[in-house]
Image (cartoon, rainbow, N blue to C red):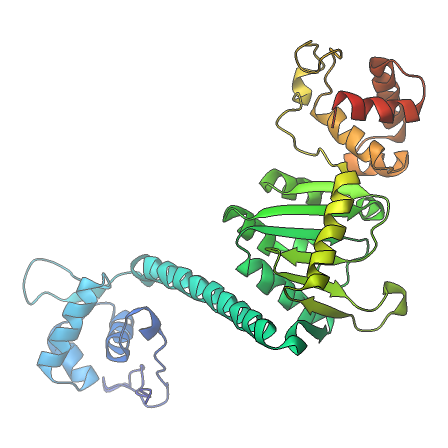
Length: 362
């Protein structure tokens, strides 16, 4: 039962019955009786044991024990060294902040464990019952929740086919990726070229690459796809053009999953690497520099800004969109590409693309 005693005072000094008390701090180790005493002390500012006994209408021994418990938890302090000195409360955010943080961390760990157990449950069903190898889910919210659950349970690697106009989860919403990368999970993502044309897309991709994601780009992708730990895949069932609520297949270990893995790897091999935040690139502030040891037979290495420009150029992004993504003018993009063509010793853009690949500039 939850205590419903009041926390207010009447003009005669007794607790009022018009303000209900609902304890909520028991989740971090504060009992309802201790919380009620602490809230009473907050209202009084300072009080002696006898005054608390009178106001709370509790046995003195009980109040003494509860005050001692609050003192140990850092919520109550005596005003001086006198044993009968008035008591004063400490700020709750100072005393309870660490306990709240620990509780939050425990809840997050428990949530990840529940997600893992749920996936193990589904995996068990798929192993023993063929009709559970493919599960159909419907609705953008359901699809988004399952994508988040799978990433939270990921242990080794997540693979993505990211097409333009996301159905359920836009890049900035996918905070689970950063949590997984921080846990050491590998991310490999192939982006459809049109996705790079969307406002803010490059900035979002740059954050992912900086956190450890490996990103590549292709002109077109056959399907939307996510694969986690080579054990579960999610693939939409209805073409984008059909509209309506999206539906997707959640596919367990099977020959169908093996085929999807092979599909991803075949596209990964031919996709163009996106070099958005590469430690091997020369910082833009250092400018260009030659070092014959960098690329045998080359002698020129693009700086970080040029590497970003070349990544988008080789991916087939139009000059206007490159300029928008990099925050420069279209003329600046054209001038920089002309400079890179001169550095590569070619006079055509296809020739530059070939030299970029041959010299390992991205």
